[in-house]
Image (cartoon, rainbow, N blue to C red):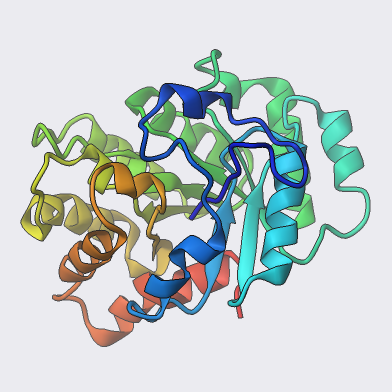
Length: 274
C-alpha cells in the first residue's frame, strides 16, 4: 500500500505526478483512511511502498511504520543512480522498518535506467545490506530487463510488482506470458499479485483474472508469489473490498498451504514481517 500528503507532510515531499493523474488519487492518504477495512480481510501486516523517488518520502514512510497499529515494513527509495550516495545511506544498519528499495522505473525518462552500470553497483550494495529490490516493471520492455539484473545479482531478491501488469482488459497474452516465465526462471525473483484492477476492464470478475493468476502460479509457484492490495491506486478502478474479494476468488483452488503461502508466508519471508 501507499500513503502520501499532497501538501508536503512532515518531510515536505512533492508528488508532481499526482497532479497529472485521477482526481481519486489527488488527495492525502494516511493509514487511518484504510484502518476500518483491514480487519475485514484479516490483514495482519502492512508494507508501505514508495510513491516518490525521494529520501524525504522514505523518512516519512519509516516514521509512519514506527507508529502503525500493525507490523509495518517499508520499501523506500535510495539514489541508486549514485552508488557513492547509496553507500553513504547504507553506512551502518538500515532502520529496522526498511526492508527494500524501489525506483519509479516506469516513470523514469530513461527506459533502460535499470541496466545502467551505476545502478548495478547500487543493486549490489542492496544485496549486501539484505534489502530487496521492488521492480515496478509495468511495460514489457521493463519486464524483459528483470532476468538481466537477476542474473547479474543472484543474491539480490527482486520483487516484480503487479505481475508485470498483464494485458487483462484486452484479453492479451503475449509477450507478457513468456516474459513472466523468463523472469520466474530466475530463482531470486518473486512476483507480487497486486495491481490487476487497474489493468482490467470495468466490471471485471475473478474469471477475467484467473488465466493470468494461474499462469503466474504455474511459473513461480505459491512460495514465490505474494498478494497485496495496492491501495489507494486500486481506487481508480475498484474498491479495496472488491480487489480483495476478487483476489481471494482466484485462489480458491489452491491447497490451504499454498493459499497461506500466497496470502501470508511469502510476504512474511521476503519483507521480514513478524
